[in-house]
Length: 145
Image (tube, rainbow, N blue to C red; front, side, top):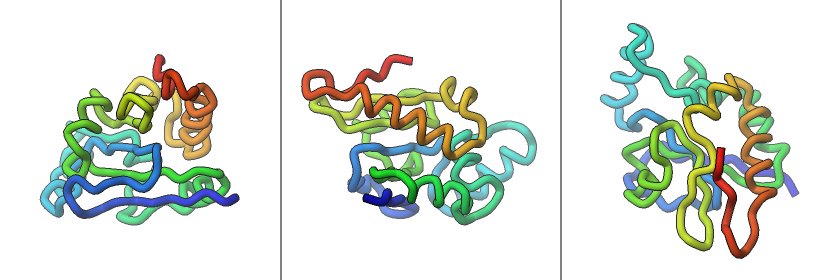
């Protein structure tokens, strides 16, 4: 089974189609995107998940797409303004990766995890897979760092 990348770049409170969702530390509006680029240029803000999936390009990095296609699960991406209140509460500080569990959304990865991952798409997906391997029906997922 091949993986599928589903990237959401529009529609507030979009319901993801997979159980794993990455939330950018950036707004998906035109103004939000422009503000993000400006803040990044002047060194006043960044988003590690943005760097992994897009870098400086407005489209997905080819190596990120390839890494996702090699996986047996899908990964949705939301901007901060596209996530639900429940997703944002579970995510905590952004960027983050959350997972749908029996108890609702649970954080899998946070900003400190992204520091260790760097800009490597496979390292991000490997970290997610290691968390997914810990899932059980009773606990949903072990989201401890």
